[in-house]
Length: 110
Image (cartoon, rainbow, N blue to C red; front, side, top):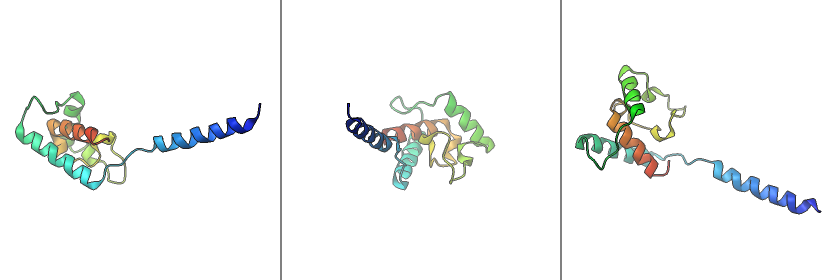
């Protein structure tokens, strides 16, 4: 058995896998759109079509109100949850805002 086909197949797998491993990074317009959508969701209140905050959203919001949440993550460091990347620091204090922002980022593919 020749090693050439196996070697070629291994190279194809490695190269195709490396492109899949790269995650998309939200652009400033994605972040702005999701902050706008989350702000609108908090204005509407508890809407059955909107995102519902989970226990983690409530916990992060309480931390943000104390000043030690995702909103305090330095800009040069990734957020602990990539779907919270770029979230408005004031919005981080509201669990409904967080849920809406996460949902928007998820719909945008992040």
